Length: 251
Image (cartoon, rainbow, N blue to C red; front, top):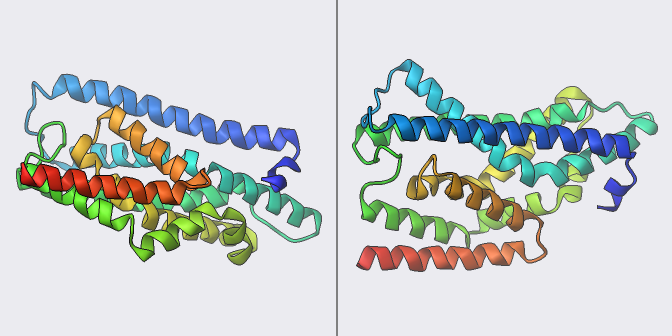
């Protein structure tokens, strides 16, 4: 964080307002879409998965991922901006911060395409309710158990370490130029995806357009990445998810 403090205030303000503005617009879009979908579900309980509906669901997932993940990557973006500014002063060519953020978001947009495809498949198999929640408690229990176990796996620890150590990531993965910055963002998005993708599947437990569920997951992802004991808190929550899943499965 010391590197961030050395940045000019106008740079901090510009980056902060940009990230905050994109996040706010994403949440406003989700709020509007959730309201429209809740009103339309009674009139159309079974959605027709044509090209337009698939595109709408993909856009929903993509905007949702932007709104959920940008807050947690903000510290990394600010540290990247501080290091990039120093490199520019030392005569090293660097790309704008936007290239780094774009690379990061591309990874989550790709995940959104996979999530939309999974939702389509689950819907065709009649496994989802009109509010995009698993109908069968057995699937809910299984997903909670799997998500809880994932919180304890080495791959989760490795990916979370990269997310919790932005200075280490940036210094070890440093690339010059616009494409270099884009690749750095892409790599960081890959680690972030490896850390959080299973948590995102829990939206099928709480409701894909349940704003409280989305906000809860957003807060957890943020705290897991920035709090001093965030990794241990993530394991504790993983244990809680496994216990909850077992209780659901046995009742």
